[in-house]
Image (cartoon, rainbow, N blue to C red):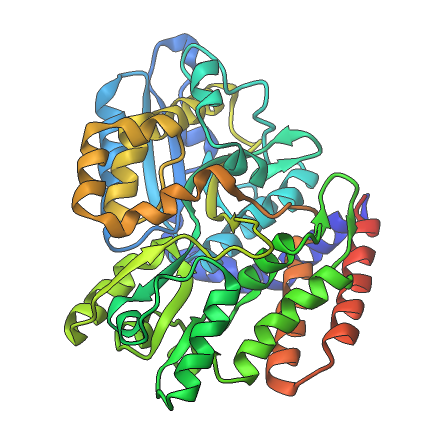
Amino acid sequence: MKKSKKLLAGAVTLMSAFVLGACGAGEGETATTEENSSADATGETVEITFWHAMNGPHQETITKLTDAFNESQDQYVVEEQNQGDYDTLQQRIMASGVSGDLPTMAQLTPGDVPDLAENNLLVPLTDMLVSDSGFTQEAMDDIYEGFLSSSTYNEELYAMPFSKSTRVMYFNQDILDEYGVEVPTTWEEVEALGEQMVAAGDDAVALGLENSYEMEYETLAHQNGAEFINGETMTTDIGGEESVEALTLLMDLIDQGYARTAGEDGFFSGPFGRGESALYIGSSAGLAHVVPVAEENGINWSTAELPAYNDTQLTLFAGNDLGVFSSATEEEQQAAIAFMAFLLEPENTATWAIETGYVPIRRSALEVEEYKTYLEENPRAQAANLELEYGMSSPSFVGSGEYRNNLLETLDGVLVNDADIQESLTQLEESTQAILDENK
Protein backbone atom coordinates (compact mmCIF):
# COMPACT_ATOMS: atom_id res chain seq x y z
CA MET A 1 0.00 0.00 0.00
CA LYS A 2 1.31 3.44 -0.88
CA LYS A 3 2.03 5.84 1.90
CA SER A 4 -0.67 8.18 0.56
CA LYS A 5 -3.27 5.55 1.38
CA LYS A 6 -1.88 5.20 4.87
CA LEU A 7 -2.00 8.94 5.32
CA LEU A 8 -5.63 9.10 4.23
CA ALA A 9 -6.57 6.17 6.42
CA GLY A 10 -4.75 7.73 9.37
CA ALA A 11 -6.47 11.06 8.88
CA VAL A 12 -9.84 9.38 8.68
CA THR A 13 -9.17 7.28 11.77
CA LEU A 14 -8.23 10.33 13.82
CA MET A 15 -11.37 12.23 12.94
CA SER A 16 -13.85 9.37 12.57
CA ALA A 17 -15.23 9.64 16.09
CA PHE A 18 -15.73 13.39 15.73
CA VAL A 19 -17.16 13.32 12.24
CA LEU A 20 -19.36 10.28 12.63
CA GLY A 21 -20.64 11.72 15.88
CA ALA A 22 -21.49 14.93 14.09
CA CYS A 23 -23.23 12.98 11.36
CA GLY A 24 -25.12 10.74 13.75
CA ALA A 25 -28.21 12.91 13.98
CA GLY A 26 -28.54 12.90 10.22
CA GLU A 27 -28.01 9.20 9.54
CA GLY A 28 -31.68 8.73 8.80
CA GLU A 29 -31.44 11.29 6.01
CA THR A 30 -28.75 9.40 4.07
CA ALA A 31 -29.77 5.94 2.99
CA THR A 32 -27.18 3.37 2.09
CA THR A 33 -26.37 2.56 -1.51
CA GLU A 34 -28.47 -0.61 -1.39
CA GLU A 35 -31.51 1.21 -0.02
CA ASN A 36 -31.22 4.03 -2.52
CA SER A 37 -31.20 2.08 -5.75
CA SER A 38 -33.34 -0.31 -7.72
CA ALA A 39 -32.02 -2.73 -10.29
CA ASP A 40 -32.46 -1.30 -13.77
CA ALA A 41 -33.53 -4.70 -15.02
CA THR A 42 -36.69 -4.50 -12.90
CA GLY A 43 -37.80 -1.35 -14.66
CA GLU A 44 -37.93 0.52 -11.37
CA THR A 45 -36.65 4.05 -10.93
CA VAL A 46 -32.99 4.33 -9.92
CA GLU A 47 -32.58 6.67 -6.95
CA ILE A 48 -29.25 8.31 -6.13
CA THR A 49 -27.96 10.67 -3.46
CA PHE A 50 -25.96 13.83 -4.16
CA TRP A 51 -23.96 15.54 -1.41
CA HIS A 52 -23.02 19.20 -1.81
CA ALA A 53 -22.00 22.30 0.14
CA MET A 54 -24.25 24.87 -1.52
CA ASN A 55 -26.04 27.29 0.79
CA GLY A 56 -28.34 30.31 0.51
CA PRO A 57 -29.15 31.25 -3.11
CA HIS A 58 -26.79 28.52 -4.31
CA GLN A 59 -28.85 25.94 -2.42
CA GLU A 60 -32.05 27.27 -3.96
CA THR A 61 -30.62 26.98 -7.46
CA ILE A 62 -29.20 23.47 -7.08
CA THR A 63 -32.57 22.37 -5.69
CA LYS A 64 -34.34 23.94 -8.67
CA LEU A 65 -32.02 22.22 -11.16
CA THR A 66 -32.29 18.88 -9.36
CA ASP A 67 -36.08 19.08 -9.38
CA ALA A 68 -36.00 19.96 -13.07
CA PHE A 69 -33.87 16.89 -13.82
CA ASN A 70 -36.20 14.62 -11.85
CA GLU A 71 -39.19 16.00 -13.74
CA SER A 72 -37.46 15.72 -17.14
CA GLN A 73 -37.45 11.91 -17.19
CA ASP A 74 -38.79 8.93 -15.24
CA GLN A 75 -35.73 6.67 -15.12
CA TYR A 76 -33.74 8.39 -12.36
CA VAL A 77 -34.42 10.34 -9.18
CA VAL A 78 -31.72 12.47 -7.52
CA GLU A 79 -31.95 13.37 -3.84
CA GLU A 80 -29.68 16.32 -3.15
CA GLN A 81 -28.44 16.66 0.42
CA ASN A 82 -26.68 19.70 1.85
CA GLN A 83 -23.74 18.75 4.07
CA GLY A 84 -22.88 22.22 5.40
CA ASP A 85 -19.71 23.97 4.28
CA TYR A 86 -16.89 22.51 2.15
CA ASP A 87 -14.79 21.44 5.13
CA THR A 88 -17.70 19.54 6.65
CA LEU A 89 -18.51 17.95 3.32
CA GLN A 90 -14.92 16.78 2.93
CA GLN A 91 -14.85 15.35 6.45
CA ARG A 92 -18.08 13.45 5.92
CA ILE A 93 -16.84 12.01 2.64
CA MET A 94 -13.67 10.78 4.31
CA ALA A 95 -15.53 9.31 7.27
CA SER A 96 -18.10 7.67 5.00
CA GLY A 97 -15.29 6.17 2.96
CA VAL A 98 -14.31 4.22 6.06
CA SER A 99 -17.84 3.32 7.17
CA GLY A 100 -19.02 2.35 3.68
CA ASP A 101 -21.89 4.83 3.63
CA LEU A 102 -20.80 7.04 0.75
CA PRO A 103 -23.45 8.75 -1.37
CA THR A 104 -23.67 8.10 -5.09
CA MET A 105 -21.97 11.39 -6.00
CA ALA A 106 -20.72 14.59 -4.40
CA GLN A 107 -19.15 17.97 -4.95
CA LEU A 108 -15.39 17.61 -4.67
CA THR A 109 -12.50 20.01 -4.36
CA PRO A 110 -10.03 19.19 -7.19
CA GLY A 111 -7.18 18.91 -4.71
CA ASP A 112 -8.98 16.07 -2.93
CA VAL A 113 -9.64 14.05 -6.09
CA PRO A 114 -6.21 12.35 -6.41
CA ASP A 115 -6.29 11.11 -2.81
CA LEU A 116 -9.81 9.74 -3.25
CA ALA A 117 -8.89 8.16 -6.60
CA GLU A 118 -5.68 6.66 -5.22
CA ASN A 119 -7.74 5.02 -2.49
CA ASN A 120 -10.18 3.58 -5.07
CA LEU A 121 -13.10 5.63 -3.78
CA LEU A 122 -13.88 7.34 -7.10
CA VAL A 123 -15.02 5.96 -10.43
CA PRO A 124 -12.81 6.93 -13.41
CA LEU A 125 -15.19 8.72 -15.76
CA THR A 126 -13.18 8.95 -18.98
CA ASP A 127 -14.85 6.00 -20.71
CA MET A 128 -18.29 6.51 -19.16
CA LEU A 129 -19.21 10.07 -20.03
CA VAL A 130 -20.12 9.71 -23.70
CA SER A 131 -23.23 7.52 -23.71
CA ASP A 132 -26.89 7.51 -24.71
CA SER A 133 -27.95 8.87 -21.33
CA GLY A 134 -24.82 10.97 -20.73
CA PHE A 135 -22.80 13.39 -22.82
CA THR A 136 -22.36 13.53 -26.57
CA GLN A 137 -18.82 13.96 -27.85
CA GLU A 138 -19.87 17.37 -29.12
CA ALA A 139 -20.90 18.35 -25.60
CA MET A 140 -17.57 17.18 -24.17
CA ASP A 141 -15.67 19.18 -26.80
CA ASP A 142 -17.75 22.22 -25.84
CA ILE A 143 -16.38 22.27 -22.27
CA TYR A 144 -13.47 24.62 -21.61
CA GLU A 145 -10.31 22.49 -21.47
CA GLY A 146 -9.00 24.39 -18.45
CA PHE A 147 -11.92 23.07 -16.42
CA LEU A 148 -11.52 19.43 -17.46
CA SER A 149 -7.86 19.37 -16.45
CA SER A 150 -8.60 20.23 -12.82
CA SER A 151 -9.69 16.72 -11.84
CA THR A 152 -7.54 14.65 -14.18
CA TYR A 153 -5.28 12.19 -12.37
CA ASN A 154 -3.06 9.54 -13.98
CA GLU A 155 -4.55 10.53 -17.35
CA GLU A 156 -8.04 9.66 -16.14
CA LEU A 157 -10.87 12.13 -15.56
CA TYR A 158 -12.28 11.49 -12.09
CA ALA A 159 -14.72 14.41 -11.78
CA MET A 160 -16.63 16.82 -13.96
CA PRO A 161 -16.46 20.62 -13.54
CA PHE A 162 -19.51 22.31 -12.09
CA SER A 163 -19.24 25.31 -9.72
CA LYS A 164 -16.26 27.15 -11.20
CA SER A 165 -14.93 30.68 -10.89
CA THR A 166 -12.03 32.77 -12.15
CA ARG A 167 -10.03 35.58 -10.55
CA VAL A 168 -11.07 39.04 -11.70
CA MET A 169 -10.07 42.61 -10.90
CA TYR A 170 -12.71 44.81 -9.29
CA PHE A 171 -12.16 48.54 -9.82
CA ASN A 172 -13.48 51.74 -8.24
CA GLN A 173 -14.18 54.06 -11.18
CA ASP A 174 -14.34 57.21 -9.03
CA ILE A 175 -10.83 56.67 -7.64
CA LEU A 176 -9.44 55.96 -11.10
CA ASP A 177 -11.09 59.14 -12.40
CA GLU A 178 -9.65 61.12 -9.50
CA TYR A 179 -6.14 60.14 -10.62
CA GLY A 180 -6.90 60.41 -14.32
CA VAL A 181 -6.01 56.82 -15.15
CA GLU A 182 -7.66 54.08 -17.16
CA VAL A 183 -8.42 50.65 -15.72
CA PRO A 184 -4.97 49.03 -15.35
CA THR A 185 -4.23 46.25 -17.83
CA THR A 186 -0.68 45.46 -16.59
CA TRP A 187 0.97 45.06 -13.22
CA GLU A 188 3.24 47.97 -14.08
CA GLU A 189 0.15 50.19 -14.32
CA VAL A 190 -1.06 48.90 -10.95
CA GLU A 191 2.30 49.88 -9.45
CA ALA A 192 2.17 53.33 -11.10
CA LEU A 193 -1.30 53.94 -9.64
CA GLY A 194 -0.05 52.94 -6.21
CA GLU A 195 2.84 55.39 -6.50
CA GLN A 196 0.42 58.21 -7.36
CA MET A 197 -1.91 57.42 -4.48
CA VAL A 198 0.87 57.20 -1.90
CA ALA A 199 2.38 60.45 -3.14
CA ALA A 200 -1.03 62.10 -2.74
CA GLY A 201 -1.34 60.81 0.84
CA ASP A 202 -4.49 58.87 -0.02
CA ASP A 203 -5.91 56.75 2.80
CA ALA A 204 -7.04 54.19 0.23
CA VAL A 205 -4.58 51.77 -1.37
CA ALA A 206 -4.25 50.97 -5.05
CA LEU A 207 -4.77 47.22 -4.67
CA GLY A 208 -6.59 45.00 -2.22
CA LEU A 209 -5.73 41.30 -1.83
CA GLU A 210 -7.31 38.43 0.06
CA ASN A 211 -5.49 37.23 3.16
CA SER A 212 -4.87 33.96 1.34
CA TYR A 213 -3.22 35.50 -1.70
CA GLU A 214 -1.69 32.27 -3.01
CA MET A 215 -3.68 32.39 -6.26
CA GLU A 216 -2.37 35.86 -7.09
CA TYR A 217 1.18 34.72 -6.38
CA GLU A 218 0.82 31.58 -8.51
CA THR A 219 -0.82 33.58 -11.32
CA LEU A 220 2.07 36.06 -11.35
CA ALA A 221 4.60 33.23 -11.27
CA HIS A 222 3.01 31.64 -14.34
CA GLN A 223 2.81 34.99 -16.09
CA ASN A 224 6.52 35.42 -15.36
CA GLY A 225 7.36 32.09 -16.98
CA ALA A 226 7.48 29.78 -13.97
CA GLU A 227 6.13 26.28 -14.41
CA PHE A 228 5.32 26.21 -10.69
CA ILE A 229 4.16 22.58 -10.50
CA ASN A 230 4.13 20.23 -13.48
CA GLY A 231 1.49 17.57 -12.89
CA GLU A 232 2.85 15.35 -15.67
CA THR A 233 6.56 15.28 -14.80
CA MET A 234 5.81 15.74 -11.08
CA THR A 235 8.43 18.45 -10.71
CA THR A 236 8.38 22.00 -9.34
CA ASP A 237 10.35 25.21 -9.75
CA ILE A 238 8.67 27.18 -6.96
CA GLY A 239 12.11 28.20 -5.68
CA GLY A 240 13.25 29.37 -9.11
CA GLU A 241 14.02 32.90 -10.26
CA GLU A 242 10.68 33.51 -11.99
CA SER A 243 8.69 32.43 -8.95
CA VAL A 244 10.84 34.44 -6.54
CA GLU A 245 10.39 37.54 -8.72
CA ALA A 246 6.61 37.10 -8.65
CA LEU A 247 6.38 36.97 -4.86
CA THR A 248 8.89 39.80 -4.55
CA LEU A 249 6.67 41.98 -6.74
CA LEU A 250 3.65 41.37 -4.50
CA MET A 251 5.63 42.03 -1.32
CA ASP A 252 7.12 45.22 -2.79
CA LEU A 253 3.62 46.51 -3.54
CA ILE A 254 2.64 45.87 0.08
CA ASP A 255 5.86 47.23 1.57
CA GLN A 256 5.53 50.48 -0.40
CA GLY A 257 1.94 50.96 0.70
CA TYR A 258 0.52 50.36 -2.76
CA ALA A 259 -1.36 47.22 -1.68
CA ARG A 260 -2.62 45.45 1.42
CA THR A 261 -4.42 42.29 2.40
CA ALA A 262 -7.87 42.09 3.97
CA GLY A 263 -6.63 41.66 7.53
CA GLU A 264 -9.37 41.42 10.12
CA ASP A 265 -12.05 41.73 7.44
CA GLY A 266 -11.17 38.22 6.25
CA PHE A 267 -11.98 39.00 2.60
CA PHE A 268 -11.37 42.22 0.71
CA SER A 269 -14.89 42.47 -0.71
CA GLY A 270 -15.90 44.49 2.35
CA PRO A 271 -13.04 47.03 2.30
CA PHE A 272 -13.37 47.43 -1.47
CA GLY A 273 -17.11 48.03 -1.13
CA ARG A 274 -16.34 50.73 1.44
CA GLY A 275 -14.01 52.52 -0.97
CA GLU A 276 -10.74 51.52 0.74
CA SER A 277 -8.99 50.50 -2.50
CA ALA A 278 -8.99 51.45 -6.15
CA LEU A 279 -8.60 47.82 -7.21
CA TYR A 280 -9.29 44.41 -5.69
CA ILE A 281 -8.39 41.00 -7.05
CA GLY A 282 -10.70 38.22 -5.96
CA SER A 283 -13.05 35.50 -7.11
CA SER A 284 -15.61 36.18 -9.81
CA ALA A 285 -18.07 34.40 -7.52
CA GLY A 286 -17.52 37.21 -5.01
CA LEU A 287 -19.71 39.63 -6.97
CA ALA A 288 -22.63 38.94 -4.68
CA HIS A 289 -20.52 39.93 -1.66
CA VAL A 290 -19.34 43.22 -3.19
CA VAL A 291 -22.77 44.38 -4.39
CA PRO A 292 -24.53 45.09 -1.06
CA VAL A 293 -21.53 46.81 0.55
CA ALA A 294 -20.79 48.92 -2.53
CA GLU A 295 -24.45 49.92 -2.86
CA GLU A 296 -24.60 50.95 0.79
CA ASN A 297 -21.53 53.15 0.31
CA GLY A 298 -22.44 54.52 -3.10
CA ILE A 299 -19.37 53.08 -4.86
CA ASN A 300 -19.20 53.31 -8.65
CA TRP A 301 -17.50 50.07 -9.59
CA SER A 302 -17.18 47.27 -12.10
CA THR A 303 -14.83 44.41 -13.00
CA ALA A 304 -12.04 43.81 -15.51
CA GLU A 305 -9.70 41.05 -16.58
CA LEU A 306 -6.60 40.48 -14.46
CA PRO A 307 -3.60 42.66 -15.29
CA ALA A 308 -1.02 41.05 -17.55
CA TYR A 309 2.64 40.57 -16.68
CA ASN A 310 5.32 40.19 -19.33
CA ASP A 311 2.53 40.60 -21.89
CA THR A 312 0.98 37.37 -20.60
CA GLN A 313 -2.72 37.12 -19.76
CA LEU A 314 -3.64 34.34 -17.37
CA THR A 315 -6.12 33.54 -14.65
CA LEU A 316 -6.49 30.51 -12.42
CA PHE A 317 -9.73 28.59 -12.18
CA ALA A 318 -11.14 27.72 -8.78
CA GLY A 319 -14.24 25.98 -7.53
CA ASN A 320 -15.57 22.47 -7.29
CA ASP A 321 -16.30 19.43 -9.44
CA LEU A 322 -18.70 16.47 -9.33
CA GLY A 323 -17.43 12.96 -8.67
CA VAL A 324 -19.05 9.51 -8.53
CA PHE A 325 -18.10 7.04 -5.83
CA SER A 326 -17.03 3.50 -6.67
CA SER A 327 -19.42 2.06 -4.07
CA ALA A 328 -22.32 3.03 -6.34
CA THR A 329 -23.90 0.33 -8.48
CA GLU A 330 -23.53 0.44 -12.26
CA GLU A 331 -27.09 1.73 -12.56
CA GLU A 332 -26.43 4.46 -10.01
CA GLN A 333 -23.26 5.47 -11.82
CA GLN A 334 -25.23 5.81 -15.06
CA ALA A 335 -27.80 7.92 -13.24
CA ALA A 336 -25.07 10.19 -11.90
CA ILE A 337 -23.62 10.65 -15.39
CA ALA A 338 -27.08 11.52 -16.73
CA PHE A 339 -27.51 14.11 -13.94
CA MET A 340 -24.10 15.65 -14.71
CA ALA A 341 -24.97 15.87 -18.40
CA PHE A 342 -28.21 17.63 -17.49
CA LEU A 343 -26.49 20.14 -15.22
CA LEU A 344 -24.02 20.99 -17.96
CA GLU A 345 -26.55 21.48 -20.72
CA PRO A 346 -26.01 25.01 -22.11
CA GLU A 347 -29.27 26.39 -20.70
CA ASN A 348 -28.66 24.86 -17.28
CA THR A 349 -25.04 25.88 -16.84
CA ALA A 350 -26.15 29.36 -17.97
CA THR A 351 -28.89 29.38 -15.34
CA TRP A 352 -26.38 28.27 -12.72
CA ALA A 353 -24.04 31.12 -13.74
CA ILE A 354 -26.82 33.73 -13.69
CA GLU A 355 -28.15 32.78 -10.27
CA THR A 356 -24.90 31.99 -8.44
CA GLY A 357 -22.09 34.13 -9.89
CA TYR A 358 -20.11 31.12 -11.09
CA VAL A 359 -19.09 30.93 -14.74
CA PRO A 360 -20.59 28.75 -17.50
CA ILE A 361 -18.76 25.48 -18.08
CA ARG A 362 -19.52 25.22 -21.80
CA ARG A 363 -18.76 27.66 -24.61
CA SER A 364 -22.25 27.34 -26.10
CA ALA A 365 -23.77 28.66 -22.86
CA LEU A 366 -22.54 32.09 -23.88
CA GLU A 367 -24.98 31.93 -26.80
CA VAL A 368 -28.03 31.16 -24.67
CA GLU A 369 -30.37 34.12 -25.12
CA GLU A 370 -31.19 34.37 -21.43
CA TYR A 371 -27.50 34.53 -20.59
CA LYS A 372 -26.74 37.08 -23.31
CA THR A 373 -29.50 39.28 -21.93
CA TYR A 374 -28.12 38.81 -18.43
CA LEU A 375 -24.65 39.97 -19.50
CA GLU A 376 -26.09 43.00 -21.25
CA GLU A 377 -27.91 43.94 -18.07
CA ASN A 378 -25.03 42.92 -15.77
CA PRO A 379 -21.76 43.92 -17.48
CA ARG A 380 -19.84 43.29 -14.27
CA ALA A 381 -20.17 39.56 -14.99
CA GLN A 382 -18.50 39.88 -18.37
CA ALA A 383 -14.83 40.00 -17.29
CA ALA A 384 -14.89 36.45 -15.95
CA ASN A 385 -16.17 35.13 -19.27
CA LEU A 386 -13.48 36.98 -21.23
CA GLU A 387 -10.89 35.04 -19.22
CA LEU A 388 -12.32 31.59 -19.89
CA GLU A 389 -10.28 30.95 -23.04
CA TYR A 390 -6.93 31.55 -21.33
CA GLY A 391 -7.72 30.32 -17.82
CA MET A 392 -6.00 27.29 -16.34
CA SER A 393 -6.37 24.95 -13.39
CA SER A 394 -3.57 24.18 -11.00
CA PRO A 395 -2.60 20.49 -11.23
CA SER A 396 -4.01 18.11 -8.65
CA PHE A 397 -1.86 15.37 -7.19
CA VAL A 398 -1.77 13.04 -4.21
CA GLY A 399 -0.71 15.18 -1.28
CA SER A 400 -2.23 18.40 -2.69
CA GLY A 401 -3.73 19.24 0.69
CA GLU A 402 -0.40 18.92 2.47
CA TYR A 403 1.27 21.03 -0.21
CA ARG A 404 -1.33 23.80 0.08
CA ASN A 405 -0.94 23.93 3.86
CA ASN A 406 2.81 24.34 3.37
CA LEU A 407 2.23 27.05 0.75
CA LEU A 408 -0.08 29.06 2.99
CA GLU A 409 2.36 28.75 5.90
CA THR A 410 5.20 29.94 3.68
CA LEU A 411 3.30 32.95 2.36
CA ASP A 412 2.16 33.85 5.86
CA GLY A 413 5.76 33.75 7.05
CA VAL A 414 6.86 36.07 4.26
CA LEU A 415 4.00 38.52 4.79
CA VAL A 416 3.76 38.57 8.58
CA ASN A 417 7.28 37.66 9.73
CA ASP A 418 9.23 39.21 6.85
CA ALA A 419 10.88 35.85 6.13
CA ASP A 420 13.43 35.82 3.32
CA ILE A 421 11.60 35.16 0.06
CA GLN A 422 14.30 33.15 -1.68
CA GLU A 423 15.00 30.99 1.35
CA SER A 424 11.30 30.46 2.05
CA LEU A 425 10.47 29.43 -1.50
CA THR A 426 13.51 27.17 -1.72
CA GLN A 427 12.31 25.34 1.37
CA LEU A 428 8.81 25.18 -0.07
CA GLU A 429 10.17 23.73 -3.32
CA GLU A 430 12.05 21.05 -1.40
CA SER A 431 9.01 20.04 0.66
CA THR A 432 6.78 20.10 -2.43
CA GLN A 433 9.19 17.98 -4.45
CA ALA A 434 9.33 15.51 -1.57
CA ILE A 435 5.51 15.21 -1.69
CA LEU A 436 5.57 14.75 -5.47
CA ASP A 437 8.35 12.13 -5.30
CA GLU A 438 6.66 10.24 -2.51
CA ASN A 439 3.45 9.87 -4.46
CA LYS A 440 4.70 9.23 -8.00
